[in-house]
Image 1 (spheres, rainbow, N blue to C red):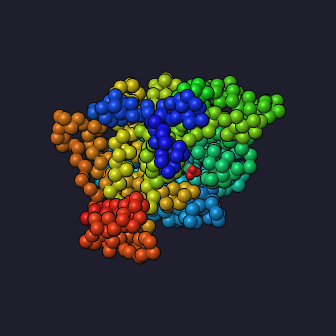
Image 2: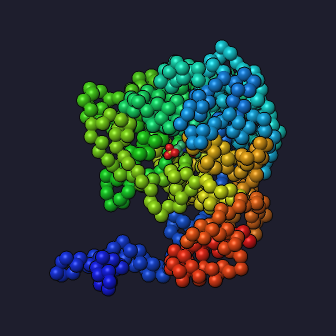
Image 3: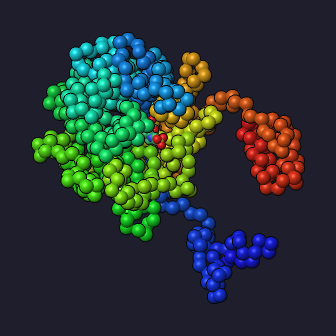
Length: 596
Ligand code: GBH
């Protein structure tokens, strides 16, 4: 318990119990650590929780194993062969929008390096490849008045190369690069975009459809809406009407999706026999305080506003009751006479409902939610009324927003099963980043894929979720939107200081590839299994020189510091400065062992 600490008196409390020294009775209250310690004793150690335990088994036969990219993030060739400009060309060339002024002008130069990309896919042994079509590459001004044959040819060649490699294409129509010409007339805010998108979809179905069985209309309508039209962190960069714009934009996107689905259904399904759907993204949310009903409601609201916003009209019909109620109440609170959420007519509800052939899901992480009352503020955030934080024990990644939370994926999959009547689900993105120095031995990514994919297996085998595919984001390190090339999600490292932009596999490639070959996780107890064959470590890149270490005014290179006398050196500084010195000594020692 907290007690007298000699020189420090009562200011430091070392106790498992808090003692109130202002109270003559000196009451003791257990701290959180007391509960933690109690559990350690009860368990006589640290057994894995149910969430953490691996299970073994296989996915469905003919499971879709894929990896994904998007046109603006990899293609480059931003003005080649008649391509029109997109809102991302415009946005990245606007000063102050992108970290270090990075652009997609060259990106991974995939427009000219198709063979390298196919070789990479073959190495991973995926059955599918998810890529997106650049709308302005095919229709430079966004309309069908002018079809750019050179652009179509590029995608034709890509499809042929994939099929020749026995890799099935999964094609996204819209991964955020809207033709600038359409933005100039209002973009997603102008409802004529619905027709434009339908016509664009028609061109792709007609020209590429004979070679494509899997289509995705929109990638992440939530991000298009919120980052593009509320926060302004993504193109087109609007943040001036957070009360109305998100609802107008989303309304048009949902209708555009439905029209594209109907075109396929009416004109192409019979001959092409493919599947068309939308990919929504969502975090999973847990209550910040598991003892508070309000926090459960906030967690629910977060997910309803994330994927429910789009999935409810498409899978169940009309906007979700939670979304309708929240926007209406906040609108009325702000003195309006009706909701800022537009209404679908009964005919529209019918036309949109059921426009799916599977459920496309992008998922990265979970958050902890709690409610916040924003008063009468007229803003999307206030309508949702939720704020989120992370649990600080969740492992970090190369992106601040992404903490490793494998358990959340299984819960989200169960949510989708229960909410939308057990549709077939394809995970169309899931992955993790790193930033900073290059290390091809990406243990964090192996861990991420192992843990997340194992949760997907649990959802399938234990919860009966109808999961038919999984897609790793991303095949290549690429332009990570507003943060440029700093956050690297690739299975392959792309060396940007080499003008040839070579792709080098990270260690996670052979690991993911093993999961694919085994179609899941074989039980090591019944092994060894031929399919399970991850390479022990990636090809070693020479590690960039370690910076000089400055300590107590001494300039030491790590090499010098480490040579000969790790122990002595560490001890020496320990003698001088105590604990701080010890950690520096250990740091240098660690670096040395890593280099060995
Ligand atoms: C997906 O978006 C995208 O489909 C894909 O293109 C992208 O590369 C990938 O995930 C990784 O981000 O910096 O705090 O403003 C997922 C949604 C959009 C979440 C960008 C993070 C930036 C948050 N992501 N967002 S912040």
